[in-house]
Structure formats: structure tokens, C-alpha cells
Length: 138
Image (cartoon, rainbow, N blue to C red; front, top):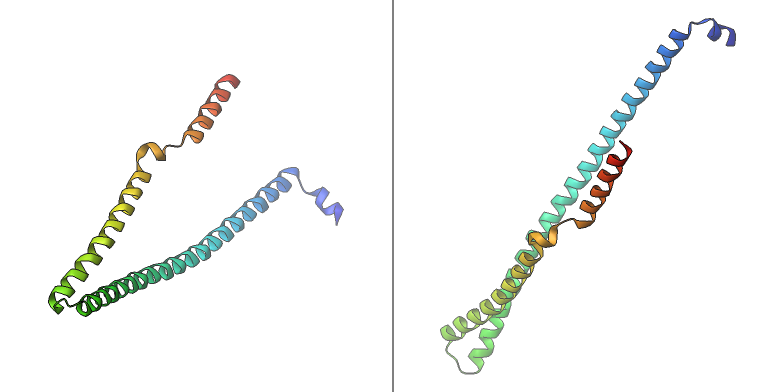
């Protein structure tokens, strides 16, 4: 068997090697595509679950806040307030408290997104060092 391989010209051996390497790379790329597709499918399912959970959580918060309004209204009615006035005052109080919390969270989020806090100083510095190294090597 070894004699048969040595009888083949070097160009044939190199051509076969190139073909084998090319085939190997094609198979590796196909495997990577398949794996990436599977990962994307899992990520999409996780994203759907996250979205459904978030929607249900928002609904639960709405129901909870309605219960808080109803409870506060009941307390005000027991204190002698008229039902329409108690309902209005309870809804207004809950709205103000939740609105204030929402306003604070939005402001905190906007402050975190300001451009000066999102710059990438370490990456920029590393790129400057890389560029200097390349200039020195030329």
C-alpha cells in the first residue's frame, strides 16, 4: 500500500490534500451553521418566554394596583368618606405614588444611558496601543 502512495506524483498528493482540507472546512462551516441555527432557535424560544412572562407580570402589577386602590378606598369609606370620593382619592394616591416611582426609575435609566457613561475608554486605549505597535513594526 505504501508503494502505491509513493508512485503517485507529488502534485496529485498535494491536490488530494488541498481537496481534503477544503472538504474539512466545508464540513466545519456546515456544522457551525447548524449549531448556530440551534442556538438561535433556543434563544428565540427563551425570548418568547421572557416576553410572555413580562406581559403577564405587567398584568399582575395592574391587578395588584387595582387591589391596592380598592383596599385604600374601603379604608377611606370605613373612615366615613363617601364612596365616589374615596374611590377618587384612593386612585389618585396610588397614581401619584406609582407615577413618582416610575419617574425616578426613568430618570435613573436615562442618566445611565448618557453618552459619557457609555464610552469605551479601555477599548479605545487598547486600540491606540495596537495601532502604535503596528506603526513601530512597519
